[in-house]
Image (cartoon, rainbow over all chains, first blue to last red):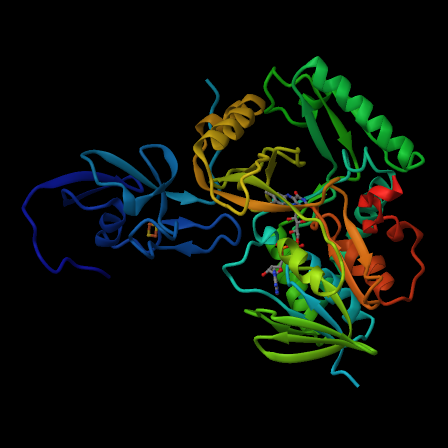
Length: 100
Length: 369
Ligand SMILES: Cc1cc2nc3c(=O)[nH]c(=O)nc-3n(C[C@H](O)[C@H](O)[C@H](O)COP(=O)(O)OP(=O)(O)OC[C@H]3O[C@@H](n4cnc5c(N)ncnc54)[C@H](O)[C@@H]3O)c2cc1C
Ligand code: FES
């Protein structure tokens, strides 16, 4: 659905999105990476269960919530990709944190 | 003949409940509301429909609150039936946690006073740590126990406001936002309000403008003492359900967020937030529910309570300008069912209300005491 309009640098990082491996340009946000890799949703909403994609890309709307490196409800547009990051759909409300 | 039977000034939860109640009785009603920059407790509150703890210093308030809570199930059913807007109301019972012996003893005394005030209509139980833990496994060992009342519950206050606004529309209420009122004239048989919209006339007028009530009251010969009290609240990300009933300081909404309150501050007309209060609020919540330590906050806000000198509501008809009323109160969420029912009937004169008459401003008159 999306493609990059310019090529900035050749550095790439490896991501694991929904357990599949992708190479994406370094320095972009997780939300941009997920869109670039062609995913058609990042989460299912907790109330109606409807699928969502990032919307504002600037930290305001909270529509881009994903589970990043095991931490639920992260704003994917506010997190920069890192090598070997694991990224999963946010399915509804977050699990309760485990108590130490 | 005036265009309207009633003008309601203020379209928050109080004005909307009363306008809705009057319009359901087939009166012609106009609501003159302020703009989006005004202080609006109705858009920043905690959403409890709360009985326990209300009216220990004033028996009529304990009785009023109990009646409001008992009217809630039918009130919300009717409102949702007419508008299709759900309010997430749950009469789940509610708990007030005690963290030490002293809090526990003060709580027992307060609950007993309220029970006596209501002729045993208010029912409560004191639960020890194990009994609380049975219902809410997530509590910490610091929770000594709790007072529990089955009459308590909670609601989404923004959906409630939306439902009331649609309910008003459904019953033909004319709602006018962004109004500035320059002058109110009391004339034979009615009132003329000079507002941004123009001059609007009605047989009776009800002041429900919250913090705006004092200057409006002066135009109608009423001294309405209003006291400001800021509360701060935080809200978390959405979590799987873990809290099946509200507590005074922490509640999980039907949509999964956890609302964490609250503070009391005397800072005048400033509805901002402050790190010092937010830290205290967060600390207390984590003391009660350790799992919250690892939950993300999404937002925090401040909102101004509309208080009276003794904390109890004011229901007053002007003696100088009969036909002019005011409803000024805290706990406008809880009391919404009462305002849309018996209080609206009292204003319409269709009901002699011994209970409501006890809330006149006469109680602040020093010559009375
Ligand atoms: C932090 C906090 C937590 C709370 N928690 C609870 C709770 O858990 N349970 C509960 O029952 N209650 C709670 N409350 C109280 C409840 O929110 C209020 O009692 C209720 O919202 C008051 O409604 P209102 O319509 O009187 O006031 P507001 O919502 O303030 O509305 C007043 C309206 O009048 C308008 N207005 C003002 N001046 C004028 C003017 N001159 N002309 C025209 N319009 C005017 C304003 O624009 C506004 O829309 C809480 C309040 C706060 C602040
Ligand atoms: S896309 Fe709006 S907050 Fe991330």
